[in-house]
Length: 200
Image 1 (cartoon, rainbow, N blue to C red):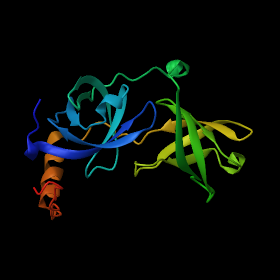
Image 2: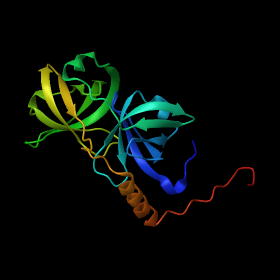
Image 3: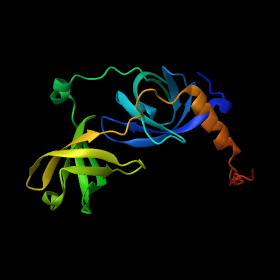
Image 4: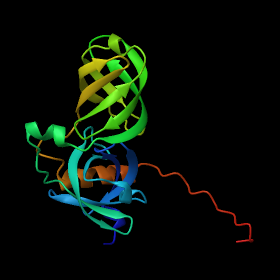
């Protein structure tokens, strides 16, 4: 699969299984899905959120194919049944996050120690000071994730995540093409000249 530079847009990819984030290039975008290119696509599990440049929310997708530093993403995601959440795979992670109350000014740094696509477990001092409705900010993602604390014990709390997904209809390809034109119109930084130790 080759990328047409005129039909590419930058995207932030969030792996919903472990909350990891990385930058990628999205291309061949249709209402059914797209391809993404990055040297980190082989780390993806199954479900992802894409934050396309110029859009305020994530688009939910499923990885359906891998290529050479590329992955095909389908936007036609089968939504999980409510009762199936306990069957989700929990992955151990170690992510420093900033958590703040939605209705009061309590803000604290804590660690996310395990994660699944619908929730995670926090560790930190004084989590009992947080209200039930919170926002979680993770490194690499400039959108806070709305969440609700569902249990607390000692210095741990279990939270249910409410990912900021784009409601249907998703961004249409023509909207994305318009954003790409706007990005192309922005002044570009000049590439620095590379100097080789071998005189090149």
